[in-house]
Each structure stands twice: as C-alpha cells, then as structure tokens.
Length: 76
Image (cartoon, rainbow, N blue to C red; front, side, top):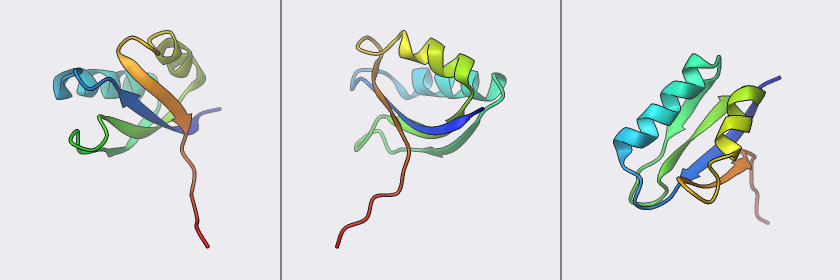
C-alpha cells in the first residue's frame, strides 16, 4: 500500500535530478502531490509505493537528505 511522504534532497542536488526521482515515483505507480521551491526545501511530497520507497531509502545520506511521513502539523 502506498503512503504519503516528504522526500528532501541534499542542497547540491539539481532540480533536474529531483524531477528524475519524481518520475521514478510516477513510473512505480505513485503520484507527486507537490514540488517544493528549492530555495526552502529541495524535494517533493508524494504518494510512494513500497518498492520505490525502499529504493529511495538506499540513497539516504547520499543524494537524499531524508524521507519522512507527510502529516498535518497543528499548533495551539
């Protein structure tokens, strides 16, 4: 089952490279929810199938800075 994640890339990763990873999500059966402005967060949020997520996790610490579940944050 696919779940929603935020994928953040290292600062030196180009927008072209980020688009290539986003395309992998779509090819694997997922969908991109939002591309973030690279000045603030170099990455995207997406619904990512487990096989694609597993592949991305192998790049953490290298090209991918972090992957975290996408969720709603509230403050009081």
